Amino acid sequence: MVHLNMEIENEPALLNSASQNTAATYLRKCCSSEEWITRMLRQRPFRDSDAVHAAADSAWIDLESKII
Image 1 (cartoon, rainbow, N blue to C red):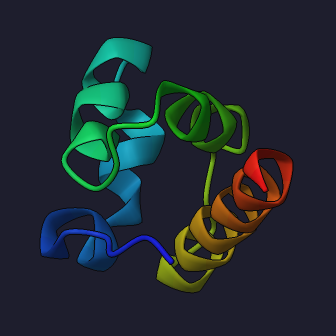
Image 2: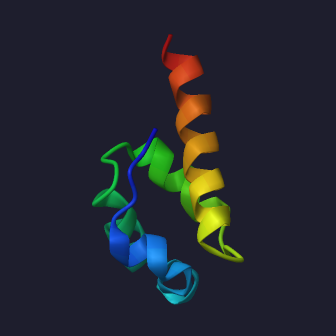
């Protein structure tokens, strides 16, 4: 499970409105996996913080299953 920082968790609009590079920088603070970051960026825009969490968990579980 990925722990999102409070900035992203409370304001998904930051991820939605940020450029690709800036959004990647926000996400990198949560997880350094470039594949996870790419998956998250593909899922923008997020309707709310629950959608961000669901996307983060889904991307993480999918990556985990590919590694194992």
